[in-house]
Amino acid sequence: MSGILEIYEFGQNWRGTDNFQVMPVGNFLFGARITYISDKRGTERESCTVMMVRNGIQDGEINIYEKGVLTANTHHLGLKSQFQDYIYDKNDGAFVISGASKKMGEYSIRISPNGTVPSFT
Image (cartoon, rainbow, N blue to C red; front, side, top):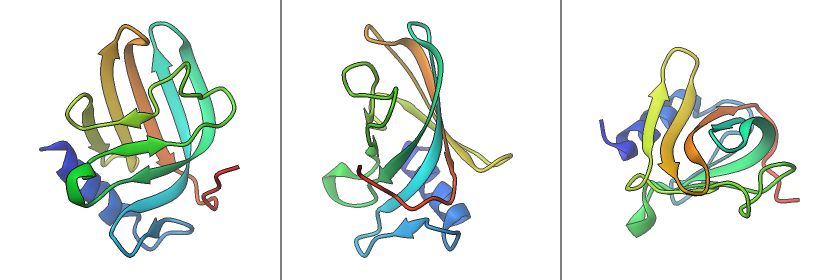
């Protein structure tokens, strides 16, 4: 499956749940538990706001908004299906992103909506 189809299936699973917003243009906006595992930083966990873009030339982009230990200086938070692999884990409803880079080594990011209101503070 393509990364964009994985995002679609993830959204279909979570649509209608607490604080999982489907914006008028189709993007998904929600609060999530993030588990970030990388060769260079080990395992880190944080609750962040996530937006998955579902239209236009940015379709398939995923943005994890900085919070706590997860910052753009130290982590990949702006993700694209061209550069990472996307998998929707039907077993627990999580969205999993994996990739490799000089910045992080091999890494995986597990995104699980947590029902909290998205916040940019």
